[in-house]
Image 1 (cartoon, rainbow, N blue to C red):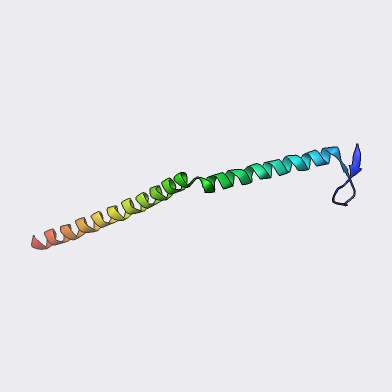
Image 2: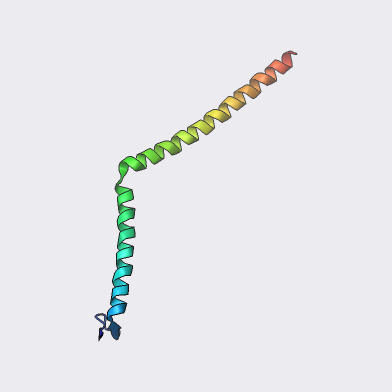
Length: 79
């Protein structure tokens, strides 16, 4: 079955229209997922907190290492 293309671009088959509808549904599904993720404030805050916690832990470990190096330096100067 061939029908006129609603956009005026020539004839379009039912199969082509179904394919376009399926593609549009898939895109819409992806868009809805992206919007749901952005709207999930609790999850976003949890992710940000985890990032901050990780950065803090790295900085703390660096500070502890630096403090130990300084301590060892002064211990070695006494000897």
